[in-house]
Every structure is written in C-alpha cells, then in structure tokens.
Image 1 (cartoon, rainbow, N blue to C red):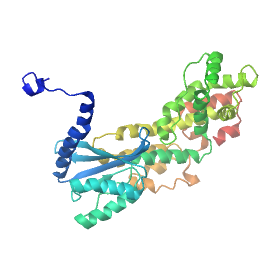
Image 2 (image 1 turned 45 degrees about the vertical axis):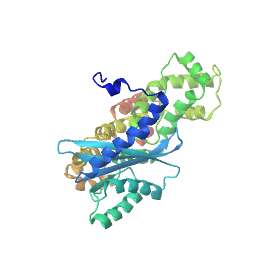
Image 3 (image 1 turned 90 degrees about the horizontal axis):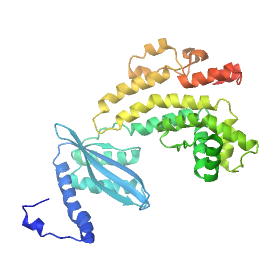
Image 4 (image 1 turned 60 degrees about the horizontal axis):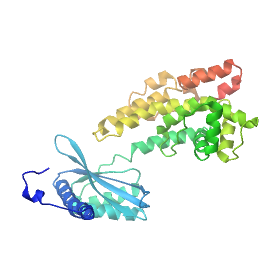
Length: 353
C-alpha cells in the first residue's frame, strides 16, 4: 500500500495487537475528530435509539449527530452505550454525557422513536442552559403508522395476524409437519414469519399466505381424514380454525390491500434525505385515499387542507358509502364475488365483510 514509505516497509503487527490497536488506538482518535466537527457546527440534530443486543444480551444505545454542511446533510455515528436497565434516567444520563462533549447550545432537535420523557427532560435543560426550545416534530412517524394500522385492524376482531403467524410456526417448529405438507401438496414454498411490531411490512407475509392457502386447506383436510398424522400442536388448531372460516382469504386480502397503500410512504421516508417538509402533504394524500375507500367523495372534496381533513366526521353514517361501493381491494373483491357466485357464503356474510 505504501511502497515509498520506509516506516510502512518495516512495520509488523500481530493479530492480537492489531485487534487492540483498532478499538483502543484508532477508534478514540476518529471519535475525537467527529466530536470536534460536531462542536464546530452552528446547529446540529441529536439522534438516538436503544435496542436489545442479542450477542451481549444488554440494551445498546446508539447515538448519531446530523449536520448541515451547506451542500449536503450528513449523519455521523458518535458511539454506543451498553446498559442493563434503560429507564428514562439511564438514557438521559448517557445522552447528557455526550452532549457535554459537543455542547448543548447548538442543539436544535432531538430525533427519537417514542421517548417523550427523555425529550421533556432535555427540553428543560436546553431552555435553562441555552435560553431556547428544541424543535418538536413529534416522535417517529414509522412507529405511529405501524401502530395505527395494527390498532385499526385489531378493532375488527378478525385475528388475521394469529392465522398468518400460526402458518409459519406450524411448519417452522415441526419438521415432520413440513415434510408431510411437501409430500402431500408438492409445494416447497415456505411460509414467512409475521412481524408483530412492524405490521405494515407484512405485505409479503400476507401475499405468501394467500399463495399457499389452497395447499394449506388440502393439508388440513388430509389430516382430518386420517391420511396424515395430526401434529397436536396449538398452531395446527389455529390454522384449522382459519380453514373453517370461508372468508379468511378475503380478510387477508383486505389486510394486504390497505398495507400496500401505506407501505410506499414508509419506504420513502426511511431515508437520510431531508424529507420532513414533504411529510404533511404525503400524509394528507395517504389518509384521504384511505378515507375515500368508505366515505362519499363529495364530503372529501371539501377537505382541501390537512386541518379540514382531520375534522371530517368520518363516524357519521350519512357520510358512508353504500356497502356495495366500499373499496376493499381488487383481490379481496374478486375472491368475495367468487365465493358468492359459488354459493359458499350468504348475502349477509358478504354484507358483514
């Protein structure tokens, strides 16, 4: 690498010595340069997030600083802290230790997930030390969208997540069941795991479930006829219960349709680019589009701004579309029509959906 350097030519370093040189020699130097760069900024944003480190089995608090260098936005990794407890006091103490090194006066915003108590403590501290307030842009929108989608779907009581999750665990924890399933159906496509804290990202899970559903029903029927052994596990009983529900594919289809509507905005905003100025407009289009699935267009046309949209009395039955005009998604509508034409469901069941 350095053919003109006599020092490099005679340099030798063993594996163990090199492993110590990197974290205890080079890392502090680069961290010092980063902290010096941040402390020189007129304004900067502090980012932090804590999660479980499965290797060390402790909470890992990662801290970053976001800077504006007049030509681009830069996010720099500052360091990580490892904690057994991650209470508000613990997190605040670790963040304060870092802020004492880079200066709190130029801090303009805290970027976080849902740590409102930490934000309030740091807000008071900035007001006391710098005589200003931090910019409050609320907590992470990704968490809010995932939780709103989850709560909305759970309020229906269809328990789609239990059905899709049981499909995964039935064949994941029981290799014998998986072998019987593949032998009986000649299907080698595996089921995907349902993520219970990021609901909207389960689009691929719902699609895989719909793809495998005919094979799943075939497997369950063969077990009930005694042609295959009964695994006698809870996940099998959950899947069996869903197979007895003729409308389960329709429910999954509606789940998939709405999740597909929301998923693009999550992908777009998981970016280091300064996207915040566009968030309000994109959220306005998203919410209005979802409300348009079941509300009459004339009422939504009057909601020309975000504030007006928030005040639309969507619970009023006079604003609701006729049941035949509600948009449940193309796939779900096609499945529902097929079930009705084959007389597997009644008009009442269709109306309830």
